[in-house]
Image (tube, rainbow, N blue to C red; front, side):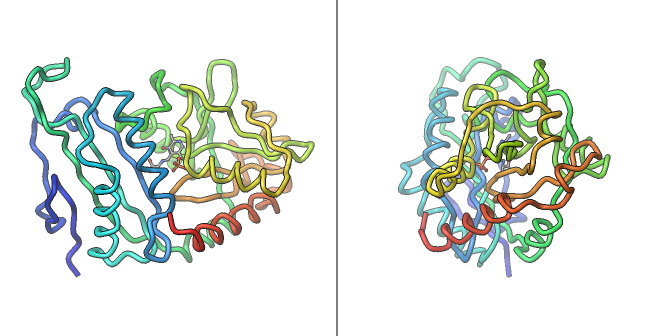
Length: 287
Ligand code: PDD
């Protein structure tokens, strides 16, 4: 089967998909993106991802390539053209193509819109969730607007690489006050020693995760104690449980931080049941 990409309004074979050498996304990371999980052939939380994409575009004073409805239609089409049952759809919008110069182009430019889709293996993901993952902490050296989902990800890339090189799956980024901001590509959570669910509150320091918002809603529905506040690495090590959330990982238990076990060092009941309920509820509700 030929993989298909979407580039500026056209569905093209993956191998032939390309953008201009002077695209500002390529030259300045002057672009924003989204990753939507696909489960059972449906884009999970598609509308929430598109709403966040619009917000990112507004924050960077970038134009939108098309309406939310049209974009939603292309996401669904990408899933069916690529015959994705479980996987992800990647969406990126750049400011467009212009002669290389840092300020916004003076002439009108059309935003570049690209989408790709690929399969993931849900069995492998469940196996990983059953084992839990290790994280490695490191200083958060990113810019001051981590709430905008831009493709300026080199600090995240370096952090993830350092984590993987040390045998950990994810990096947990720590601010100058010693508080965990978030993962290199996920939000960070603990179940504290009192049993409350804790995740950092929204600010310019973290991405407002779509999965984070759903898990908060799910926990409140269950009448769990939930606190949006920052926590230290030491507190996470003394916590009952820790986990990460993202469109790719859903809810993934963290069983070790910097080589030291979290709680008994196995996935905890809160993370495991939130993962199960999140997957279940999103299978039932479409978008
Ligand atoms: N990353 N924080 C960061 C820095 C992220 O990159 C992501 C997602 C999240 C979780 O957000 P959400 O729940 O909306 O996926 C938090 C995606 C999956 C990525 O870059 O591949």
